[in-house]
Image (cartoon, rainbow, N blue to C red):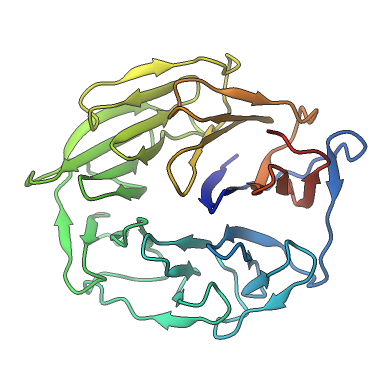
Length: 330
């Protein structure tokens, strides 16, 4: 089962997002209480903005917005009634949303949106190309047609110019990007392996810094926190404090065993890490060196679109249902 995740913290609120197709029975009488909304759609992605608005990217209603902590919802303007694959707030405050075919930006905390026209190389095809961006605004996509053999292209100036990243891998399934002023990190996935390629400031090319062989349903998860890099495979967590040159295993507080597609997430202010494994939730306040287990009483199922709010409640999706913890967790 494939699961993908993103977490962001704005002004003390943490968002933890993942997607899963598994339906689970939720133990409402113990840890969780149900939340409801009236738009008749499913949430793909969530984001808490700097003004503590909650944005919900839906499967067929565009973006919904709540300004009062889930009590009421309105539909954002300027964005199509379509599936919103992801929402991301950039370092400059702009919010970006993208669908399978189009990209949108908002400069008013998600209330209104305008379509972004990205100037991409000729091989770009929005129907079959994976395009994403880092929090500092670097765009990256992987060409997937037969002629260009799934090459990686990177733009650091909003698509005005593109660099063909030279990576000695014949078949790239997809690639994720993390970047700051000191380094660019590419998390590359193939059919049976996952790689971390890094280009440091003033270096002319990307170099492979980490490689793992993968099982059938997993991939190496990689997150950049300042100049620290955290990575996870099916069984272990790893950390590098020297921009990927050296790695150490970190296990303090993590229940040992098969992670079953682990998810690493990080806060917007880079101070809190979150980690999900099977039905387990953990957080770390020291860049992943130690982990604290969150006992939800939910021993099966997968967490989705989950937040730790500014008053320390968990709120979001478990399976396809919206829930909130009955008590603060911190």
